[in-house]
Each structure stands twice: as structure tokens, then as C-alpha cells.
Length: 287
Ligand code: C2E
Ligand code: MG
Ligand code: MG
Ligand code: MG
Image: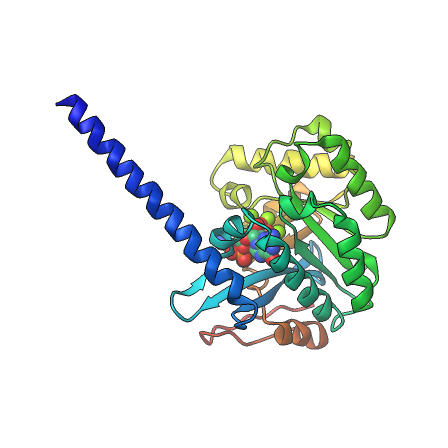
């Protein structure tokens, strides 16, 4: 009896695995045609200074709108793209779009997410530099966001890449900080401009003493290392008050603005506010 149910579970598990592989293949297949089919879009979310809340930069966030399945979240399709060289094709598209939109807001930087596979690619720096030069954007107007995962399998090589990027004038931010394998000893070795505190800690900080304590220790670490500290996922005034007390230098989240279409991001820096949203919702931001 036990043996039979064991076999059934094994068979069920196999079916599930097959299904998982099928789903991934389908996504990969559709995704590889998404650029040509015009299904991709970049949105831009303001990053504001913790003070007068002026917009200092925009994070570029990728959207995939499919006819068949509606919008698919980057948390779903990026990891699948990351399994193959498809990520390089998407990454090149993302960077080109982000740099193009950066021309519209010369006082802000654009912050672009790079996956570990992109960061570890041969001649990563050369690829980035080529697109930046082609776009005619100064390196300090591009912030490169990478996660701890990209850094910790070959610490020496990663540190060298970061060193060269910063020497060329690019900004570098460590994304989702606090969720990965960073040990503080290694973080000290990485030349960085900013730490981005993961949303999960910001989410918990008003309710839980533990999250609030983690946020405070990350901001202290940032100050000690002379880094900017960007809190992501800020949704309430209560969080802003705690983040101000903790000394986070920058804030990003729905409280200030949802990710915006390029033309709305441009309107924001030109006029100081935007009031448009797909569902008629008002997004306003005073500078
Ligand atoms: P991330 O880089 O940590 O981006 C922040 C995510 O938090 C974004 O989700 C953003 O829309 C969301 N967010 C911002 N403010 C708030 C808030 O106040 N509340 C809540 N609940 N969420 C907020 P999104 O756009 O779905 O992206 C998810 C992840 O997908 C990103 O996390 C990033 O890791 C990845 N991703 C997005 N675009 C790209 C891209 O162009 N290239 C690569 N390699 N990865 C990307
Ligand atoms: Mg990011
Ligand atoms: Mg993040
Ligand atoms: Mg995140």
C-alpha cells in the first residue's frame, strides 16, 4: 500500500515536472519573439531624495504584455530568460530603451536591473559601454543595479568588474539588499554607490521590531561606508517617518509614484507632477 502510493506520488511528481518544463518552454518561445512583436515596454519609477522628495533618478522596469495571457510579471519571465542567452537579447533591448528615455531627463539618472548572467558575461563592461556611447549618455547617468547573487560566487572578479565600472563613471547599486548571501565582510570590498533595502523589510518595519532593526542597521552600514541608501517599496507616511529617523537617503515606492510610461516620466520632471494612470487613478508628486 505504502509502496503503491509512493509510486503514485512519483508519477504525479514526474507529470508536474513535465508540466513545469512545458510551461518554461512556452514562455521561452513566446518571449524570444516578444521584441519583434512589440510586446515589451519599459516603465520608469521615480527615486526621490528623503527630504524635499525631488526626483533624482528613475528605475527602469520591464513589462511584457501578451495578447494571450495578458501582462506577465518580470518576476516570472526574467528568471526563465535568465536560464538561456535570451536574457542578453532582452537586456540589450532594456538598456537601449532606458538610455533613450534618459535623454528626456538630463538631471536624473536611470537605474537599470542586470541579472547575474548578464553581469558575469564575457566583456559585460564593453557591451554596456558600447550602448551608452551609441546613446550619447554620460556614464554617471546610468546606475547599474545588481543583486548579491551576481557578486558572491566569484568575489574577486566581481569586485574587479565593479571597480572598473565605477572608474568609468557608472553608478552601481546593490539591489534587494538584505535578502541574499551578503556578508558584511564582503560588502566592504565592493566599490558601490548605493544599497537598496529590500521591500520586504520596508513592508514589515511598521509592524515588526525586527524589520525596523534591520532597516536601521542597513542605513547605519550605508552611512559608515559612505553609500546612498535607497528604501524600496515605500507605501505609507508611517514608513517615511521611520525611514527619516533611520537616515535612509532616498525613497522609492507607490507612495510617490507607480512605475510610469516614458512620456509621463518626462512630464513629471518637466512639470513637477503627473496626473494620469491607466485606471484613472491620480499619481501626483510635488517637487
Ligand atoms: P526590483 O528590481 O527589486 O524592482 C522593484 C519592484 O518593486 C518592481 O516590481 C516595482 O514595480 C515594485 N515596487 C515598487 N514600489 C513598490 C511599492 O510601493 N509596493 C509594492 N508592492 N511594489 C513596489 P516589478 O516591476 O514587478 O519587477 C520585479 C523584479 O523583476 C525586479 O525587482 C527585478 O528584479 C526584475 N526586473 C524588472 N525589470 C527588469 C529588467 O529590465 N531586467 C532585469 N534583469 N530584471 C528586471
Ligand atoms: Mg531593481
Ligand atoms: Mg529591488
Ligand atoms: Mg525586489
